[in-house]
Structures are given as C-alpha cells and as structure tokens.
Image 1 (spheres, rainbow, N blue to C red):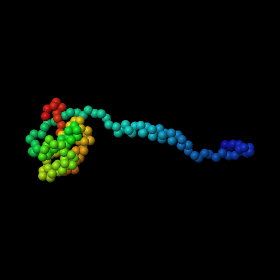
Image 2: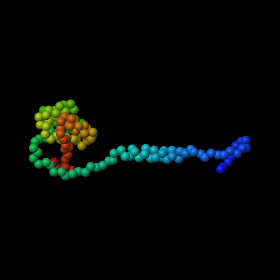
Image 3: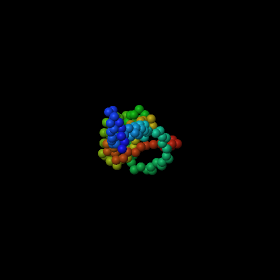
Image 4: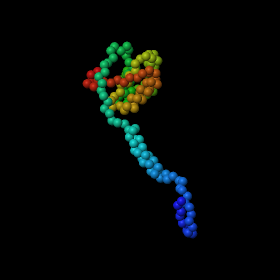
Length: 149
C-alpha cells in the first residue's frame, strides 16, 4: 500500500480516489456543440435552383371555362369571372366573389395566373384564400418555355 508523510512526520495511508474526472468529457461536449451550431443553419438555408421547364400538353376541350385568378407584378388581384375582369380586387372582394361562383358551380376548375415577378408567398397566399373560399383544387398556369401558348 502506498504511504505518504504528513506534516507531523507520521505516515498515513492514502485512499484510492473515487472521483471521475469529467473535464475531458466537457471538452468533447463543447466541441460537439460548436460543430452542431455551425452545421445546423446550413441545413435550413435555401439553395438557388433553376427549375426545369417542361413541355406539357394543353388540355383538349375543357368541359367549362375555368375560374382564373390573376396576380400582376404589383400584387393586385383580378378575376376573369368578375363583373369587370379588368378591375383589380382586394383580398376580401376576391374571396367573396370566388365563394359566390363556387357555390353555384362547385366542380369548376380554379387556376392561378401569377406574374413571374410576384413573390412566391403572394401566390401561395392567393392559393390558400381560394381553398378557404371552397376550391377543391387549385392549379397554376404556366407558359411553354418557347413562348407558345
């Protein structure tokens, strides 16, 4: 058994140390914390992508004229079946008009025609309003990449 001398010169028996040194574990945890703090924001950032253009065939002989909500570059809303299709509508008027049309024709197709310069959130907001007004499904209008149709 190991012995050590105390200040009075007596020999005492040393007890085994029963504590665990956690300092290395804390160091490892801090390193892991820093790694996760650096990598987590990278997982949620958007990536710039150039979406593909597809050559889709237009639907032949649609059964009835669809309800088309247009959003221009300034964020104004237009409805092709409104009293005056050339007059912009505010959000409340748009919702009421769409609800009235869909009450009469619940199976009417609903499409959104958004300007390419309109923020994506504005188009999604219109789609949500249309769903709330009773549209069973909402489609997006596009044009062909070569400018046809």
